[in-house]
Image 1 (cartoon, helix red, strand yellow):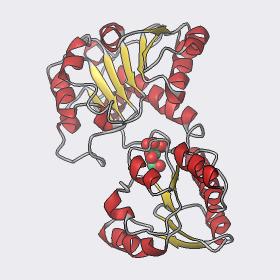
Image 2 (image 1 turned 180 degrees about the vertical axis):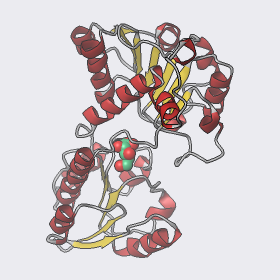
Image 3 (image 1 turned 180 degrees about the horizontal axis):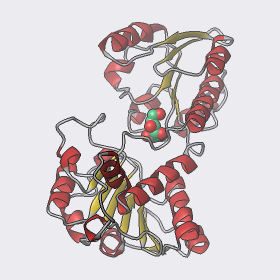
Length: 330
Ligand code: 8YV
């Protein structure tokens, strides 16, 4: 195919070769100011874009008049103006499924590490402060048998429920746009309104996408419904939470602790109060960040892009309307 692909995310040598054998490839290997300048210079001739962690808005994509497809190395698509892309007949694809289990593992890692204060106490050992048997001052909270509340019962939420139900004997309650009978049957999960879940769950986990409807979903009122012994876990998107309200709830001990992998601004600002709270465990957006899964995501994204540029429907198409419109024109 006589196409120009612009990458704004590094790929493994094998995937780079796969693309270079089929198209002209430009790699923008950093997203600093110089990298963004090189990206803007490459856009006018780009037919395909592949990458992640960059807001692709109209101002930027207006520089790419030949663009046919954007392939995101992510399941979240909040970095894309989907209406704009669809209006320009540009296919958007993402990488669901391949990251589900790894991201659910991250969610459970945060549940366990936050409840049992693993990082805090490991650092105490490393600092040479383990001088006597651990006492109540350093006790954590049990996980097994506690109620796991999942907000957003999609693929990742379901994988989290599987871990809780079968692995730790946790009663599962959940809130989502629609009841999920199959999930209820498989995990004996029970649907709750958002306020009921916040009042009843011991662990409250966010596993929903960032959309206009979910932005700021968990604010001061919602934190006030949670119990003082509850633990809040976010592996979705930072902006689903009012971060200042969460900080206040943690400072005032309205909730016991938080395990956070995502933040309103990433990387987390060095002066964030979250970094000075002893009941916060913060990780740098490692949800899908394993060698195996990131390679699988990149491979999926390459497959999606090559299909789109060859005139085929990508396996993981986000804006189906664009494909339907193309078929109608055939
Ligand atoms: C990645 C993610 O960290 O898939 C997503 O939506 O947030 C993570 O898997 C990120 O998108 C970079 O690939």
